[in-house]
Image (cartoon, rainbow, N blue to C red; front, side):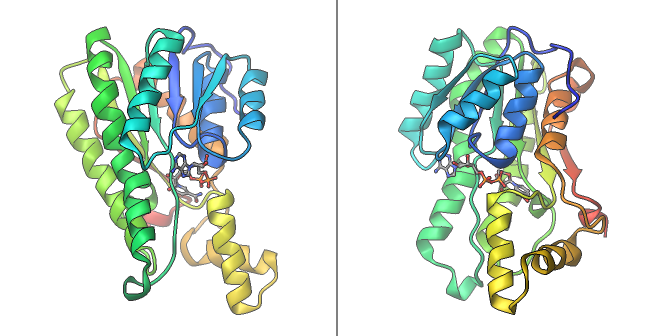
Length: 263
Ligand code: NAD
């Protein structure tokens, strides 16, 4: 469980895209523990995610917008505003991965990764930012990746999308620099979520490794600490970005990657 206990976000409403699983659910939980109302989004175990947020003492609702569909994204922002009166914190987290070399990369996977991991953040921000500015306070947190800063073979679409979202973060931060709305990005290294478990399973099958050996190999190739970052740690970083202490952080890319990008 996260250590966030003071209700610094009481009365605020947060929307976290892709928050039925992994990092998004960890962030939503930390924001809920800090007192925010939550709008969850994503597929899969919606009821389990809602129950986890309610157990953290927050009001939570779910909107099933598909992040590849701009009209559904617009409807989700309107839903959040109608349900809780305003949207104060927007976390662009939904993301998918596909690993293949460029010449073998399926075109539909390229399009889906760019849509979900990059374009969806443009669509949420273009709809949500005007109301945040009008209210004089807002926080946008884009979940990029260490792959926003460095590349890895086989991850062309993901790396392109994550480099792109760091650029988008800088522009959005500059366009709002004289307002109470900040826009920043978090750049995690490996976190043990379903997105990474699939890469471990694929590595184990490809190289005939047991699960433990595949996990150690994947981490060992990139992450000097040899430890996974946790969703709770990223959630606590998101709560910090919502604090007054972070009000002059604008356009930052915060690494939390076990030393990956220090190499
Ligand atoms: P995950 O697979 O556990 O969760 C992904 C979430 O996105 C789920 O809630 C899923 O339902 C949702 N989602 C997928 N497609 C969607 C769509 N079309 N519309 C709406 N929601 C959709 O993955 P995760 O590892 O928690 O990743 C979350 C974010 O963190 C991603 O942006 C990912 O790139 C980033 N990230 C992950 C890692 C890692 O090691 N796991 C590292 C760095 C950055």
